Length: 260
Image (tube, rainbow, N blue to C red):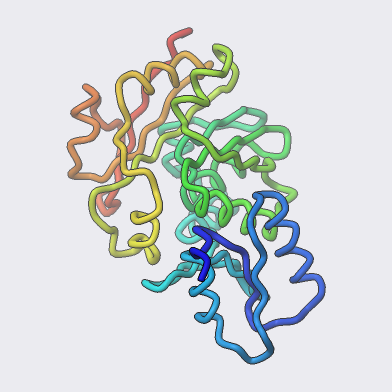
């Protein structure tokens, strides 16, 4: 028996033609196999052919392996976007990042693209957002989910798989306005379903001073860093958080660009 594929694309139980076309386009885009199953055969049977599946369903795109699954989507970002739509101006990306329409943003640790969604709304259609994700499964899930959502009120989010340090080193100085980092937290947040799978798939490497310096070179205005409230990650970089709400489990720090 051949070794299972590390990652493959599959369909849920639907046989809808547009859904299959969507899955085929994803498989082609990322060079992944598309696995089809016999009628009424269980989806879990495909896990004999692939270690991890990107599953296209009518209501969501999800990642699934033998240990669990997670649906792609805005998650907690949906609540933040609703507050912004109501006119609130105290989202961390507004209060700490001061993002405005037309800016160019690089999210160097895309993950589930929650912060990217909020940043894209703040910079609007005249802005631009590039998301970098080193994990192929997470990059595929983020792009597939974002393609479904779309928004005429937000900047399009371009998803690129790669090492953020290498991407930053290849970029010209002051080529974006803002760089975002959300390094992997050491423990799960209770309000974040799917965190266990995210932690298994994401790069656990901490943000290093060298990568931070590259980010400050590439940013025209500021670098923003999210961290768990009680994590030593910011202190290890010689940083202190700028602001956090009393109830939030995360804090934010900002570092001026080298050009400022």
